[in-house]
Amino acid sequence: MKKFLLLSLIALQPAYAITIQIDYTYDTTNFFNTQAKKDAIEGVARFYGNLLTDSLLRIDPAQNPGNTWTTNFFHPATGALVTLTNPVIPADTIIVYVGARDLGGSVRGQGGPGGLGGSGFTPWFNLIRGRGNPGAVYSNANAALRTDFAPWGGSIAFDIDTTWNFSLTQNLSGLEFVTVALHEMGHVLGVGTASSWDNKVSGLTFTGAASLRANGSTPAAQSGGDHYDGSLNSEAYGSFNTAHGSSRAVLMLPSVSDDGSTIGVATDLDLAGLVDIGWEVTPPHALTATSLSPGGASFQWRSSSFFDYQVQRATTLPSFPGGSTQAPGTGGNLTWTDPTAPANRAFYRLKTVRVFDQPAAIPLPIPPPDEAPSTFYEPPQSVACSHGE
Ligand SMILES: [Zn+2]
Image (tube, rainbow, N blue to C red; front, side, top):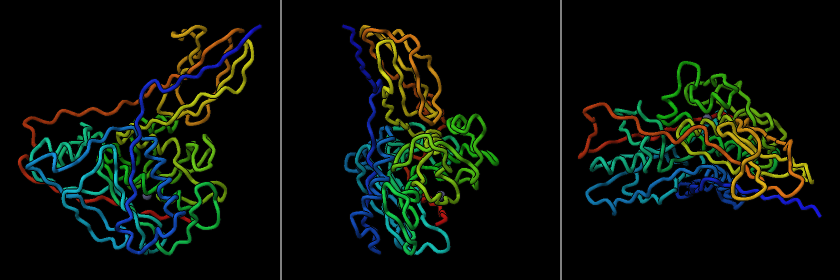
């Protein structure tokens, strides 16, 4: 009797998510007054947190005697600058303060990363700026060298008198809160706000290599330094009930309009933008069998354009000598049918290859212009974004 056995073994590299912690301390207009609203913003935080697998070191002044720091950000309910002295930021955690106020006109959301100030010595400055990511440690004077971004967090304000729809799964009447929250969280994570983004804006294009590949080898047009150009479409990253690979307006456009059908989500190009900023974006790539029979085997998986993929096949473990050729992701669903599937048992797994490695540090000019022991201050960033209803 012939047997056919499928085994899909994934996760060739360990992946650790980060936690984007939503903080309501400054929600002084009491916008997030229902569990449904909290579920919506926390669902957005979890979406990005699960995709990002960077390591972010803990920031704790008590563990670094002789050094102090401050964080600063825009109060989401008033717009005023808030400064906190010597907060502790847990490892692999980003803190985002949320709230709402009247943003005026068609502005629906305003968000960005917080700033920070430091007093002490170079290793401390490297820690609070880079959190262990060498491409993010440069001082403001050397911001042009930044290739990575490792914020402690930031803040997002939502428009208080917009009619919102807080559903995590449906495009209902009102403006999709999840779409605007995904967009503003993109700014907190550095789109249009991090130096490592700004350093890749050249004229009318964003020159990041991952964005280039996501955009079909055409340089991605940018708008005002803060967003991708409003004309761009890409493939939706399957989330919030929107199908993976469906053609959508890019999330990080100057103005996101509601298509009236499904929730506007991050697209392949949006995630590629995060890769270009320096984030390690690691979507789960599960291999599913769409057809299995003796002598036949077909598979499907979700792809992202910043990965290459190869389905590997073995008839005995542990080596996988057969399978598909390694090929680039597209942002859509990819399929492969094994043209020489064994009639007896076979084992298949999906190999994922990260195309763009975590950015390395660029050597500083000599002599190093670092400022220790000294102080520095960097202001918060924020982008005001309008969205159609
Ligand atoms: Zn925006």
